[in-house]
Amino acid sequence: MATEEKNEVSLRDKVVETIKTVYDPEIPVDIYELGLIYEINVYPVNNVYVLMTLTSPSCPAAEIIPDELQTKLKAIPGVNDVKVEVTFDPPYSQDMMSEVAKLELGFL
Image (cartoon, rainbow, N blue to C red; front, side, top):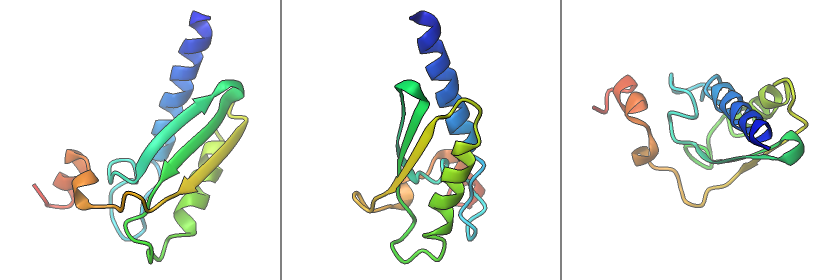
């Protein structure tokens, strides 16, 4: 059982690393640091669920970002299935950005 839990943690780490390779085309910061990811779950049999938002409902990349994320997550060795869900509740605000993102964008 301990080995199984360790595998789940390492797969979750791979999921987070992969999320950090996806960028909003208009902002030079990855979607993880921007605070667009609300929830990450890795379920038994390596199904991955990500709940995310976008900077605005009218974001020009509204179709591109979730599709790119889903494609990249499915490419992780060992991942069985991926579901990326987009929500606007709660609405995105700049307060959700990490300090790394705020520094990168000149907010700090």
